[in-house]
Each structure stands twice: as C-alpha cells, then as structure tokens.
Length: 560
Ligand code: NOJ
Image (cartoon, rainbow, N blue to C red; front, side, top):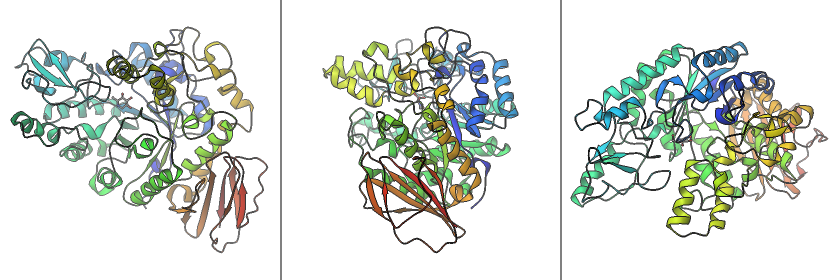
C-alpha cells in the first residue's frame, strides 16, 4: 500500500466559535486558538481541521460565506490567521481549511448580483427556476426543514438552497463558477495551507437533480427527491484535482452524505485522482429510524455497528482510504450517544477512542472529545442557537403539532449544539472559555469535566488519547494492517484484529456496562505478546484464550 503522511496523521477539528475566546466578546477567535497550540502539541495531533473562519453573516455559523478571502470579524484578521498558520507550522502541525463551495451566503457579492436581474452576468452562478403552476419548481426539501426553493419577488423566480435560505447553491455547471472556486483555493494554498475539508462536496453536481424538473413540469416526474453524487461530480473533482490539488502536497477529505463504500471508491481510488478520503455517514445513521430523519431516534444495535464499520474497513482496503470519526460539529457527543456519560464516562470514552483509533484510516478528534465532553440538556428551546435545531422545532411543534417535550428529547440526543457548547478549559466561570457571555451557554458539567482537570490526572481520557495517537505513530500495523472482525456473534463485545508482516494486533472492546466473558479464536504462533493499551490501569499483559472484560473495558494486544 502506498504510504502517505495523511494516512499516518491524526486530525483535530476546531470549531472556532466555541474553542477559545481571547477578547471577551463571548465568541471564540483566532488568537484564542493560537494561545492553545501548545495544548494541541501536548496531545500529539498532526493536523488541525479548522471549521470556516471566512467572512460570514453567520446564518449557519460560518458555513454561509460572504467573502472567501477575508476573515470573519468575530474571529480576527488575516494577520491573525497568518500568525496561527505560522504557529502551527512551527510546532509541526498542519492546517486543513474548510472549503464550503456547494453554496455561498446570499450576502456574497455574486449572489447580490445574481438576484438583481435575469440577465445579470452573475445570474447563472446560481440555480434559478421559474415557478411551476404558481408554486415551487419541485417539492425538494432543504436539509434545514421546509422547501429547498426560495421565491425571489424581485425577478419572480425561485433559487435553490439545499441548506438555509441564506445559503443559495452555486451552479457548478458554469465554468466561471468552477474557475472562481479554483482560484480561491489557490489563494489559500499559496499561503501555505495543507489541505481542505470539503463541505458537502458530493452535492455540487445538480444535473440529475434538475433534469427531473422538466419531467416534473410535464407532469411525468418519477423521482422528485434530491440525490447527491450527481452525474458530473467526478468530472468536477477531477478538474479540481488537475488544476489545483495535484500541484500541492496536501490532504483532502470530502464530506459526502449518502455515500456507500462502492461510491466512495470512486472518490478516493488514487488512480482516479479525486480526493484522499471522504466522511461517510452510514454509522452516524444507525441510531435513527429507517427512512426517517435524524431526530427520529432508535437505540444503537451493536451488530449494526460491527457490520457497518467492518464493511467500510474491508471495502476501502487498498481501494481508497477511510476517515475515522465519532464526532464533529454536526454530531452529538459520542460518549453520550454510544457510551455512558454517567458512571462509566471515563471508561466508555476511552473504549470508544480505542475502537476507532485502532482501525485503518485517518482518525479525527473533535474538540473536547479528548476530555470526554458530553451532550447538554438546556431547559428551553430558546437556549439553543443552531439553525437546524430551531427550524426543526418550529416545523414539528408549531406547524405539525408535535409534543414539545418529545421534540426536546430528540434535541437532547441529536442537536448540533451538543457539540458546540464552549470548550471546557477549567473550572472558572464560563469554563475558562471567555471572560464575557458565551454565544452559546457552557455545559453545566464544566466544573468536573475540563482540560485543567484532565491535564492534572494521569489516568484521564486526555492522556489515553495521547497514548492512542502515539501508538499509531509507533506501530505501522495500526496504520496499514489488514482488518478482520472477530467474535462477530458476540452481542456486547466489538473485537477485531489487524495483521501486517507477521504481526497481529488484537482489539477487544466491551461496549456495555456488564462484565463479559469471551473466548478468543486461536491465536497465531508468536514470540512475544504485549498489552499496548488498556483503559483499566492495573490490567496485566497476560492473555488467555478465555478472558473476562470489565464494564466498557478496552484492551489492545500486539503479537509479534
Ligand atoms: C455540512 C456542515 O458540516 C454543516 O455544519 C453545514 O450546516 C452544512 N454542511 C451546510 O454547509
């Protein structure tokens, strides 16, 4: 298998609004991040993925960009950004920027022009359609509830927005749009950034998406639903690769909702020259009811998780590359979601970290995951800030008459604000995040869960993650080894092995709070065995065929 630095790296995602505020306005900023680089260095990560810091009216917290070459005032200046990049590079940390080019803000100069008239030179930078039978052109819905079409009085047409009304979709069919994106990418790459995380990049091709429009108009539409992975997406990515990506030594990860392993191979197969890896979402959908929305909850079945993650491990082996994640700014906190954020918070957070970090792929850590931050339960909907959450509440409670308490339960489980509460640095007021009023309230558990406490405790989740990262650097088998699921029938233990050059890595994870006895398959002949890591500190390195795992216990053995 080809070796690459981005295969051997661990990425840390920063959501700047919630990371560290330096000026007391309650909003995290770039100087705040700069002040915490030594913390990241101590953790040992290699790459930072920085969520958008560009100018934005913040309808969707920076994922609605009004100027791609300027820094958002809340976050600082371009000079602050240069200093941050320099500070990272000095510490051997690479910087991956967020690239949000499926849509812009409606306040972006292109859209301001585009909506002026039907013959404006920028009209065709976006996707406009006349009304159909006096209504919207299709019945597509936005990811943030309601229609995906917004009517614009001024010219009497609708524009497409797969996300909020303030996030009109760019028309990638237009070569001028593509070139403008490519030029903007070069602007940042020439400043020295080390890659891009590409927001919903598999949604940029809309031909298939729009062609049913004609059928729809004729009344013969078969499929009115929106589909990602449109027919020209690979052409666009190959063009981007040829014109931009291939000219730099960078990493790319495309956010791709709705991809299967087969589709992902097309994005990540090195011969095709598109992306290094994608974020897939299948494992994030396992606790949602089939065919429904993320708010429609169902408990996770461990068999589904085993089956799913194993499928991805197998499918992308030598035919692409996995990204490994439990968390990001859109997902609830994993320790609350799949672990136990009460009695076994520390054990289960470490177990989940182990399960993920010993797999093949590039692991991503989301800010606060390394100290086991949990979901939050704010008493009222007014305490929430996330547009997706607020729109859903409005739709379900006020338009569809759902019981507000039930809807709050879904919000407690799934709201994106679970991930966005401010980073908990210490036990002082506002968790040491800001000296002012935070834009979103801190999680009340900050007095016990915070960085200061984690750094003072050698048994903390922080030091365990540090160890997981260090192991990946030391043992090639963790990066490159083959993956095989073992004990597939065990209902409570997720176990697998990795193999490389005669070595075997055995990963045992008890996913639940009861003790479990397991009997291992026959182990290969070996000279030495070593317990590389375990979340119960007094575990001995002796391994027997039958063994008992404590609640949420995780162990990793290396046989050489
Ligand atoms: C995916 C991003 O991760 C999310 O935060 C955002 O709301 C949408 N794309 C729209 O940009």
